[in-house]
Image (cartoon, rainbow, N blue to C red):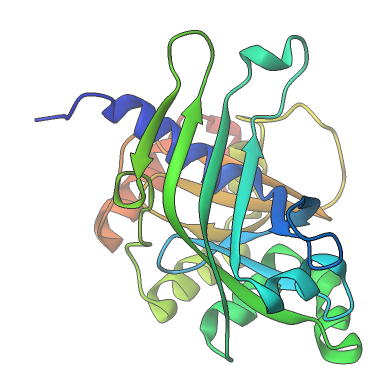
Length: 240
């Protein structure tokens, strides 16, 4: 049975998974007592929380080194009245990340960032949310405990890598048709599948990232295969 507000919690989770950037607010070390906001890209790690690659020279990293408490604000993309767009704010703590499989996955999402890490000394950090505040318009504002919004990825590193490799190697046309579900942008650049979880797939075209909703949630490889075939069948021209 769904709890009150579950549909908003699911929407909040989707926004966090699909924004790929947000405003990171830290405690200013240079001006104590004042917040400092900066725009940062992120991707979700296997536990379902944001991972950042930050310069050790940046103001926000200096602030975090002094005080790891911070906030992250994510906004739905769109035009018109910004007050009608969904937004999600999280408060939590930053933790320095050592080398792990999620570090390499970050470069699937942001390949241009590899040089920042390997040559310029940028460091990886994991954001550990405590609470989320969701607002999608009039009378929708509410707080959620972290567990109501965070969703761990259903597949381990090797299983997900195998799914992505198969789709990118054998179904390039199908990926282009998945992309048409979320954008009308016309480009010759290939669509690369860079992530799959229980609710959606992530596609990268050049430096742009798109999230595509699955028709139903999945938790197993068989369920993933069935859903991807079903989505391809919706577009007969995708047959390869």
